Image 1 (cartoon, rainbow, N blue to C red):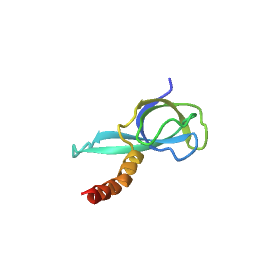
Image 2: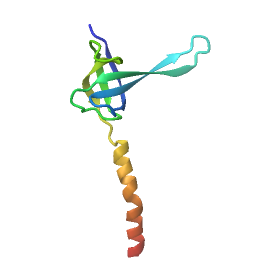
Image 3: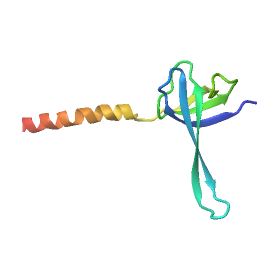
Image 4: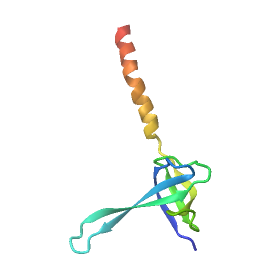
Length: 104
């Protein structure tokens, strides 16, 4: 059975490749303090459909390159707002304020 891993896309800069960040919460054996441990996996995205911030499921496969050992299985969840959507809104915000001030 191939391994399946669930994580968040942290980069999609390369063609047909995504970087998936997987966070695990662990408890320290002596101090009983919880901490996060992060791993990054490269995965093959044939259709370039995953974007940064998407929650995805990747499946283990044969080695596709030096670092790629997983394929994108499915996109589980897309964020309500992406960073690029927010940057677009931030760029329009000052212009809207100026027009409001002039009209008053």
